[in-house]
Image (cartoon, rainbow, N blue to C red; front, side, top):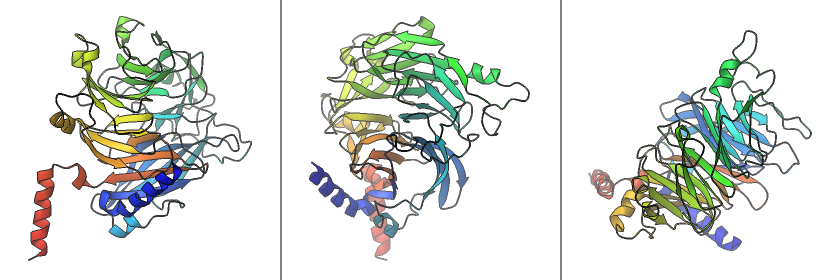
Length: 436
């Protein structure tokens, strides 16, 4: 298996200049379990500067960390052919500069941002029941030396009675945090009240820009929702609502909640997959669509408009583009019908449901719609994030067999995802110009 991955990687590396408009590889000393794009720092004529957050899992030899870096992003059509082909997978990328290190209390399994309070406020899941909230602008830069004490989070969100490691979401409408865990519960926090209570004279707040709070503020859950029979693996708010959300878990169920209707499930899809459901995403442009990814190696598309009349009938597509468990799935912010999925098979697939519908309207169990597969990693891809500011740019992180990790930033060539007739017309135009 390892030899096959190496052979596949070698073939892929030789094709990088043809497949990508921009690509950079950043070798990490430690594996990273999560990554998240941050705010824009500077806009230039040929390149932009943007922050990125990622984690480092150190296996107890050194403190686990939450890292802030500045990424120099080359704009479309500006990357030279040589810069795409000449990279060293054992080296650090010249486009990525470490800005700040936060010593995290435990592993950082998930990073999610909360732009309602500040573009630099994030929540993190760890291997504990608590959820931590950080103002990364005011947190001091720390040296992760052996024995160093953890940084103090700005908030500690409490309420889980067992570890909550992966299911974490933040609302796009209100400063609400959603979490799920091994206690089979979905918890909701309203941290706006906590921030307002901290605005007392002489005391630093999350937006003060100082050196952090005097002490962590503990916030209890405002809602506890019970309905799963096993661990909750992922949660997601409806993009346009602070009241509606969804959760998936090891019980293979998708549960929809509406906190206005109480703490019981509003609707449920049972046996949505053949194995544990690891992840989901709700389409921000077409809110009747959600995606789920599972240990059964598939991604499924559900149409919620069909949920009321027929639970099983709301599954409209099944995508089989991976060979092992799907660990992450996310709609593309640049195109409502496109999405990416990452798996333990070291690949990221980019698919388009519009293509899938056109090629197989009558069959929900085909994988038509795949437009690209990224095979630049040689270890399990544990997390990825589409850049909301730079169209078609992704950050991906993986664990490596040698104990380290890899961070890659990549934007696929627009010749791949643009309409075929448009691409052919452009190529013909370029050919005609070259013969003049």
